[in-house]
Amino acid sequence: MASTSTTTVQAPGRSVWDGGVSPMGASYGKLMMWFFLLSDAFTFSALLITYGLVRSSHPAYDGAVEAFVFSDQYWPIPEKVFEAIPFFDIHAPLVFVGLMTFILIMSSVTMVLAVEAGHRMDRAAVEKWMLWTILGGITFLSCQAWEWAHFIHGTHAGAAVAEGTTFFGANLAHNQYGPPDFAAFFFFITGFHGFHVFSGVCLNFLIYFNTVMGVYERRGHYEMVEKVGLYWHFVDLVWVFVFTFFYLV
Amino acid sequence: MAHHHEETTHVTVLPPDREKIKKLWTVAGILGLITGLEFAVAFLVPHEYKDLRVWTFILMTIVKAGYIVGEFMHLRHEAKVLIWSILIPMVFVVWMLVAFVYEGMAIADVRFGF
Image (tube, rainbow over all chains, first blue to last red; front, top):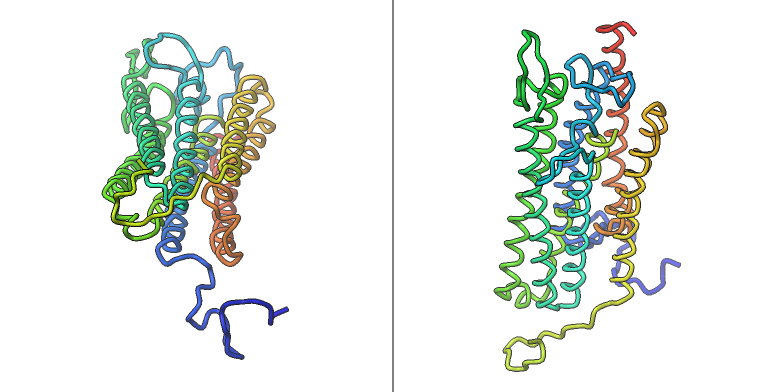
């Protein structure tokens, strides 16, 4: 078995880890992107785990869902908080955040199509799919900007606070939706993710620019598209978790 | 554009791999479908079944994450040692999540006594 057509000649007593071969079968740059993303996953996990700890240490709302009102006595039901959409003054729970999820998944698809085009050395196709990916990223960021603005400004009704006054929207110390930590986690988790989307758009643009300039065509391969693609899919992956743990559960 | 032959660099552009592209769109379709199912659960399963809701969401999220990491990030097709180098550390993260959520419930017990 071992004597069949393998290209690496191995001296007896030497393992693949003794140098000269690539045991993980990936280039240095790609490998380092994987391990960077693993460490980035730790950072996001830390935020989401802390969210889990703090949320589970607050009482949950246990009345009828129809009778739900905002209060700092219990953790809010997310779909009661995130139910606004731009331009229309109606209750549409989770619709806008669903649209954002769809946009990010689609931009992940266009990214993977750019990688496929890169494997074929098809410069025009890489340019096309990178532009769609950048467009998807910018659209997502715009949606998030609207969502933050709405969250900060609050609903028409606001929420009654201690001295008979009404508080609208949210900041890091007070919010109308629930305990102060609720808004703090919203800002930190979606903010940190949004910052990753922003960096991803910048990196994607850099790759697009280099493709247009023919850098990768001269280099003979489009591996940079793959590496930045890994980062972009990771951003999508994190959103899948944020969507579940912040908006659905 | 590609049929102009005046360019100095000689690059052979291969035709699109239809099968691979079809597979990628299938994965995209599955991701969209699961997200749709998540919405269905969010609106059709009453809030009284909290555990059922939560565990369905978590299960669907893991399936989605599997498709994104396995197919889009191509990890499923990498060397085994690379796959395990990424997955094994995440086991500890999952354990940490379980431990801290459990801890949070104990804190709620102490603070609110129910």
